Image 1: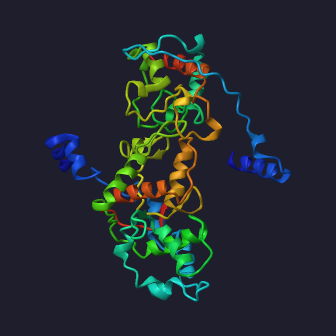
Image 2 (image 1 turned 30 degrees about the vertical axis):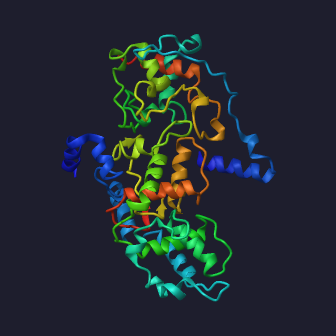
Image 3 (image 1 turned 90 degrees about the vertical axis):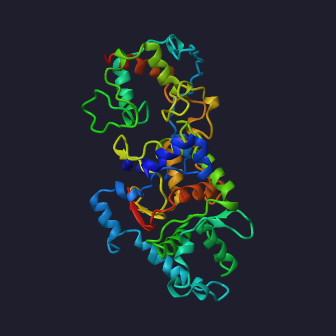
Length: 156
Length: 257
């Protein structure tokens, strides 16, 4: 992957094209504001979207996306390395409601200000010193958040 | 150490801690997290790939500048007049500016002021080689950065930077390196972010890198904008991080993953 990428970059440099043209980022989606209840739940799916658990499982593995495995153990046996910084998420849906799970994915720092877990759907305007490529974006899109919620809800 | 921490906490919680020191708890070198083969690579100068920078730095150290002087003219052949204990105190308070100055910045300043050379860019190959050479003279010395007196406010400023959230992932250094050292982040084990081995040969980069470049690599991981090396903010961060390693032995050039 690295080699392929560097070859592409070299090719671009040789052609004298601006590097910006390499960016294939999807267009920035408008941020969909959410509201949390006092007891830290978000019941309404973001943007009223419906999640796909199979896609959510893939997002949980993907290191450039949810990357849940960086910190959490999950029942995903085909992946060799599971992090141990956060709690084990096996059986999560029997311990937490959908609204609680959505809250924790969207922005766990609302209920635990000291958490190191990245807020997957925090208002981008509230983030500081963000690398240009990610300015104005949430870590996951609203659809992706719902996909991950749908996947985690299968962990009973 | 654990007992001491528990006693302090029992005595008066965070107030007692903040009065005594900006730091608490045990410190350990990233060396303890290495695989045996990487340790062996670091311990054997013939295998340690960072020694190349030491050799290069040694040559630069005795190369005469425009003023017909070299570093060795004042500091002795091979830097034998340099005090290893002083090297282990960096960053120190600069007499002129009354601000902390990193070892590399000191070398860069002397390079132009004393030798009359063209300025070296911070963390350029030559600046890094010179720092690696000088820091290697203090290998085995205990890191001993001043944290009290005139340095105390700068330590506090560095601490604030270490604990400031930034980037798309909204993370701060301390959240991983103070709260979860030794634990796995996917396949990688989190260190305490100690600097006692810097400049260090990083296997992932296949070259010697400086503390500030390493911090920028962390910034990239949390999707933050890189910061300019050699800045005042980086000097404060390096000050705090070096001081956090007070008591550890200097390993420069360490070998790290």
